Length: 233
Image 1 (tube, rainbow, N blue to C red):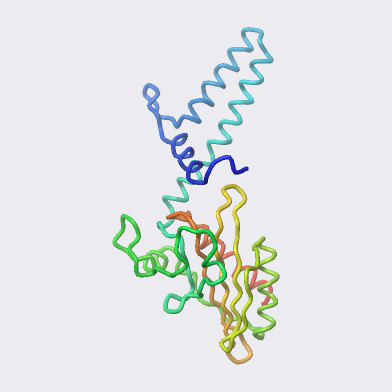
Image 2: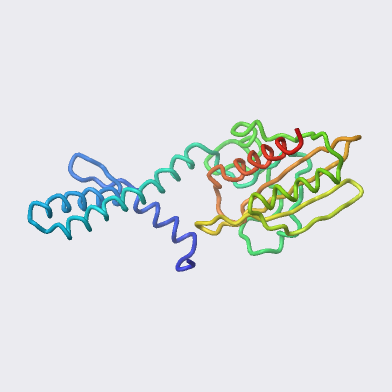
C-alpha cells in the first residue's frame, strides 16, 4: 500500500524473525506473541470471556501465519547465492537498455567479475555453481515465430513489455516484472538469434534494487524456459 519503503519492510521482517530468549526457549517475537495470545485465549474460556478468547485465538492464528513469511525468506536467503543478476550468456549478456534509465539502485551493466559479498566467488561463479541449468536454449521455430511465442509468454507471466527491437542479429525483447508484495521491479531481457531454421534463446533477469534476490531471478528464468519448451515442443 506504499505506507513504508521496501527497506523498512525488510527491516521489520528481520526484527520479528530474530529469536528472543524466553526462558530456556528462543522464539522470534511473532511466535512469542502467538503463543501468548493462544494462552490468553484458552484462559479466557475458563474465565467465561469467550468473546475475548475467540479474538485472542484468532490473533494467535494470524501471528502464526505471518510468522511463516520471515521463515521462508530466511530459508531462501540461506539456500541461494547473494546475487541479483543471472544470465544464460556470460560472455555477451543481453543488455538492459529500456530499463537502464528507470528508477534503480543496481546498475544495468552486468558485473559478473565482481566478488559476491562475504565470498571468494565472483557473481558468474556463484551462478554457475547454484544454477548450472541456466544455459541458452535452441528451439525448433523461426526467429519471428519464436518472438511471437516469447511475447505471449511474457504477458502470461505478468510482465510489462518495455521494448522490442529487431536488429541484423535478431530480436531483443525487454520486459519488467513487478512483485506483488514488495513491489520489487526486475528487468527481464530475451535475445533471439537465428541459426538456420531454428532460434537460439538467451535470457537475462536482474533486480533493480537489493543485494540478494533470494533466487527469484533464477526461478523466473526457469519458469520462462519451461513455458517456452512447452510452446515449441
